[in-house]
Image (cartoon, rainbow, N blue to C red; front, side, top):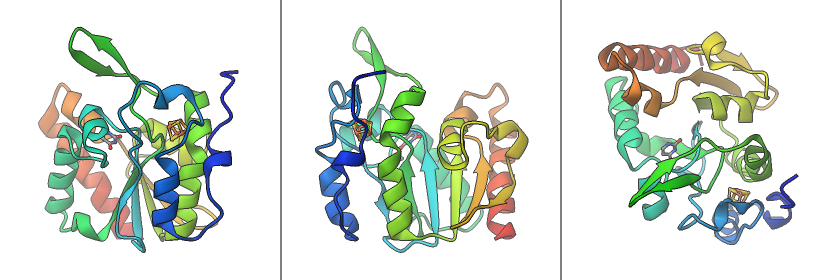
Amino acid sequence: MTGFPGAAGYVPDTDDLDAVRAAATRCHGCDLYRDATQTVFGDGAAHASTVLVGEQPGNDEDLDGHPFVGPAGHLLDRALDDIGIDRRSLYLTNAVKHFRFVRHGKRRIHQQPRRTEIVACAPWLHIELDLIAPELVICLGAIATRAVLGPQAKVTDLRGRTVELADFTAGITVHPSAVLRAPDRKQAYTAFVDDLSAIFEAR
Ligand code: URA
Ligand code: SF4
């Protein structure tokens, strides 16, 4: 146990997404708020029919306050552009709302969130999905896939596919950072675009 209560007690009882976003700036539901600069809440069209879920803010997002503004976000923008999807029509968020990192000299190196932090932060993702009520939720990478589909769900089994859930269709693909790190980046990028395009077509 971390001794932290999770986000549930910080989530206000309201259907106003902006009020929820404001409340999230004060969340101390797990210890990640201590070292991060700020809460990076989801952003985009309030009634988007598609929500994209990433892992957690990275270095750039932590400083900027908005999701997917760094290198992974640029790659995602390019992929969406390639399949004719306008980012402004979507809502983008993360499974975990604070940046987890270790310091190496001046650099802050991303660390995967722990299971306890994903669980602690889940109430924010749940209320975002409740209020936006999208038809399609696209999970980018393992952390998002587990946060949306449960701890057993595996990206390697599910990528490029959709799964019908009670409230929406979930689509699964890799994280754009994994494309940036891939040994054959060109091939990884093509596979990522193919996944996204298959997911949007399956809807
Ligand atoms: N990676 C993510 O998962 N989310 C962001 O917002 C940025 C990078
Ligand atoms: Fe709250 Fe999530 Fe930040 Fe933890 S990571 S403090 S649960 S917003």
